[in-house]
Length: 195
Image 1: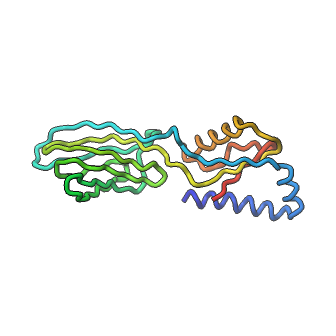
Image 2: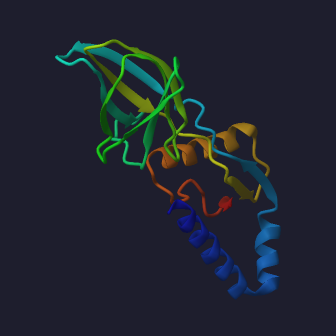
Image 3: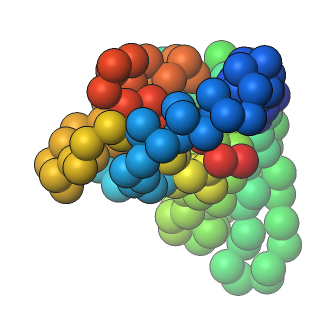
């Protein structure tokens, strides 16, 4: 869905430029002749988790937990947890409910716990669960780097610090799921996204 909004922004910009005519569009791009490029990497928005265990009355074991974003919002993406048994390589899948909660019964043992969640970083860890135990995981997912390239068109030469400030502004907007390009200063520079 996000890509469609970016495409809409580019189409609107393209439409506006085509209405101005080629000469006027050339004047606009000549006026904003300095170009700077960056991508959003979200390197400070990383995965983390905590575990705890509880005894249960069962011959099996149980795994449960909650997945949120680093902004403490429930994980609302479609996702499946993949558990790979390290002893016999069998694979178990556990569905994630809409509110970021999950639970499932599994055999005791060591597992590779894997979660891939769309715009979030891949989460991978090793867990060990004992018979008659419930292992509870509280997982916080960080954003994955984006493939889009942001292009800043400026009237004047910008310092690395100025470009970094624009990048940080756009990154903060994306972390808050705001896809509007609100970091531009109309009379100084504008931003487009290459998809």
